Length: 91
Ligand SMILES: [Zn+2]
Image (cartoon, rainbow, N blue to C red; front, side, top):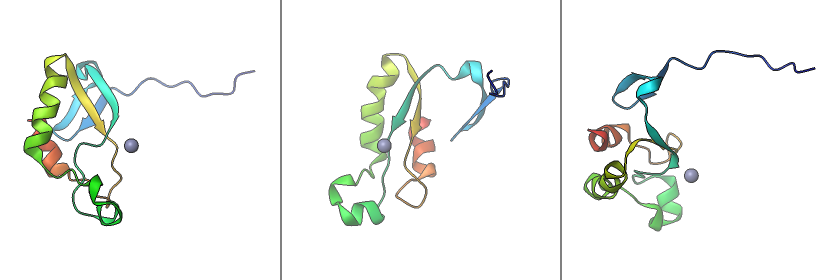
């Protein structure tokens, strides 16, 4: 017997640019670290620093050109994540 609760998929996705319809998400890269500002992880290993919006835009332009339309930035909060920079890159 399957006790799993069936539910409808969410009707929207929350992005750094606002909520969008689920159908509008497109091809999504589900785990990436786009921006890592100075924080505990970069203090422990400076090679983790990814603080350039310009470099991220150059790198992600290739993904966009190949049809990619969304990316999940998996950086935990208070670990160098910067949603303002992520929004700038997304625009
Ligand atoms: Zn990761």
